[in-house]
Length: 365
Image (cartoon, rainbow, N blue to C red; front, side, top):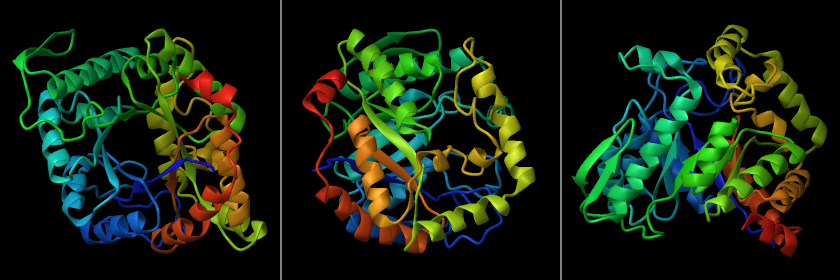
């Protein structure tokens, strides 16, 4: 069977998952997100990822902070793993280690982190924090992760880096998640991001992409991880549109793009332009994204999970064969589309045979 995990973007910021004026049946409030998380775990989702925003961007005028959000969702859920996104530079790793351990204990081992190196300059400068060059942001993130791991696993942790100093620190209680610590996710498409993932991260999130584009990233990051004696798992962002017919699904997609909030999309495009252009190789997040791609701000349309439930299930099977271990889904009408996906598509995926060969499995190890 196709043994792939499913996550969803927690809509803890206003504006939904597309930068469009099309009506979206969703909400950013806590009560709504508590209901959604309970529903998601009932219908088969494994993870929920809370976004990290501090000021308005791409129309996200209101934002619930990610760590506080997952802490609040922990007592009202039972099974789902709650991922909080955090920005090194806006947080100190020692503080995050303590908060994360607390949430992990409260949730009985269901806490994880997504380390966001930063693409939105304004979120740093409004607080008077320095905006580092692209590769320096990833160096800081790598130190951040090394500090997290040390504080979570060692009785007396010492660290002397370029960004952080830890002088005999520890965290008690430790996380109950002993694998050997809560899972650490990261994104990024640049060389610096891929190298960092190979050295320190447990999961590598990819923006939406074709199967060929996904396979290229997986092969490179897996090879980098092997150089460090490690293995990395892979998550793929996808905007999911399942309708009764393929025609209907693509009509909805066309409507989303036709009603795009052009000013917000173009503003987002300007904010992230340097994410790829600032790297020496000119390859990074959104480096090749066009206007339509940016309407879903993590290139979710590119993954092509748009069509009937059977078509979407088969496309997920193909991504799994290419090495994808997790689908991170966003939805137009969360209230309707997320439960329907869990009830109608996830079981279909589980019934499909795995096309990931033994040779491919070994290549990823």
